Image 1 (cartoon, one colour):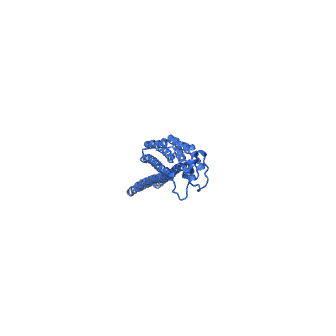
Image 2 (cartoon, helix red, strand yellow):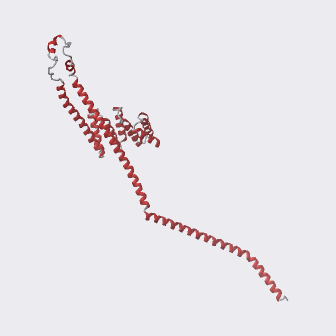
Length: 308
């Protein structure tokens, strides 16, 4: 018979072997559970970070709205647009002021030239009697034979009262003519100003008609180059860029020596740019710089060439 002590030893050994065999399985099970716990902890941490970021974004948005930064930005943009518009208006006003001063100088010069021409025309017939009257007493005067007797009558005598000056009637004629010239110049100025007022009021069609009539009625007026220039400007304002180019080309052809030529070329370059003809616009700007380097238009042309 087997003793109980041997049986208990055999059972203990078997139990020990069973425990040793189960140890790796428990270790593997423990490793899997630890990994799952770590993964869950990581996921929880990511979720927490994501929630914190969302909370911060919401707080920033609330702060932006509360402080009105978006509205402030919009207001700044509006102020920039207003500032640009005001700069454009100031530039137009400065240009108009310079134009007004130039027109006044041109009108005064034209009026003075017309009056001088009238005075010269009236003074020419009176030149011969003035020379004859200046002959010293007793000096022989060469006169053709048939006119010898009549010519002796106006001979100057010392102490005698002078004969009526022939220039008196000339002066009486010059005054009305000078008044007529001044009236014509004033009428030209009124016609020009009326057309310019239409342009300022935004009535470009009426301005074109007014300036066109002015150029046809007063082709030799010192205001005609400016009138032709404003025709092109009005057409540009109507976005009829090809007509604007044609009008400014007409100014350059009809008045090649006018001071408006550089401005007309600048207007042509702008119209060409609006027509997306960048090469032609660049050539026109280069022409302004080359042919009119001292003009204000050349300064603007250089700035545009440097920016492109």
